[in-house]
Length: 289
Image (tube, rainbow, N blue to C red; front, top):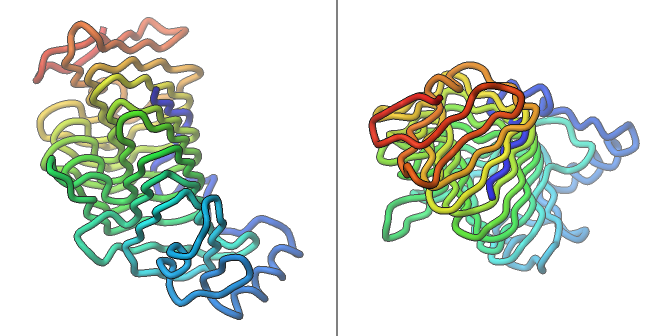
């Protein structure tokens, strides 16, 4: 089941402006901690995020001070990676190799980060998840994905059977030109997107968002603006999916180019309180009824 609930995909996301917002005492604690080093785990300071990840136990919390970190990260267990509470400024994670910026093998929690310049985790079927490739239960909050590339899911990829919740997330200028899901691609997974914006993403199918396999998506207050697909489905490309919108707010490219939906027996879209229902289409046909 894939839940998209009110997600904003744009660096201008009003819910994530880089401010600490945790009070004066938290700011003082953060300033003292950051004066000792930029990467913290269990009271220790590390030279790189990967060094901290390599010794972190499951559910450990790695906190980052504002700055730029040029690493491709591989988390073997579920951890929390977040900006230092009370810190003021951007935590920028920049991919430096032909890989995902973050590979989370067992999911995890990611908060108040900017993830950029990833190129996707290589599989036999292409590169997936330019920004974040996850396998396991995952929570992403107040994160910006921008300028990532991949064959599928230039921003965020959730494979079969996974559950992910994305809240106040911005996807902008991510590109999956080879295949689909310029910002997000869900393969039979359950994803919740809360207060999100898909802005200016591009793909062959599903410029903003794409699915394959048995997925269910719920959206609330979700905005698609200026996304583009060279084949079809500028906003969304759905395959074997059910999409339900509750209290939804759509603008920009959605719904008029919602969907290339191309499993005519098992894809449908319903927006309660409106006459808008999108049913499956053959490849190359756009539009909803």
